[in-house]
Image (cartoon, rainbow, N blue to C red):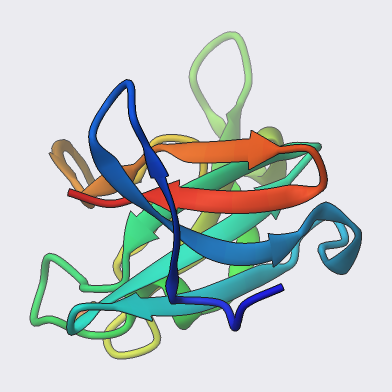
Amino acid sequence: MEAPGHVAAFDVATAMPEILVGTTSQFADGDRRIVAHDGVEIGVFCWQGRFYAYRNLCLHQGGPACEGLIMHKVEDVLAPDRTFQGQRFSPDEVHFVCPWHGYEYDLRTGECAADRRLRLRSYPVVLRGEEIYVAVT
Ligand code: FES
């Protein structure tokens, strides 16, 4: 196997080069890996059996967003009368947090949690047997 980050394949159908990330056995749930290609860093996440890839460049001030803490969304708990009851971790939504100033991104979409109109650039992840590739353009 070639070193992660090198162009290892070329999808004839889409004409996109594919970067080898590693193999599925190298990723436990919640793991991530940063690969670099042509001066661009890409964060590849494994979460609940699926893989997601985003440019490792925060929309705030260019920090390494994909390298930050992974945590469940913190959400308010409200009573039926809308009074505040406390906070809890969301059972469904997971974020990664840019280590520079704390921008949070939805791990499944790359959207900024504070403003869903903002979204990290995403890349298709292709599984070929055990091998994981990111398609880059
Ligand atoms: S650069 Fe990421 S939060 Fe500021």
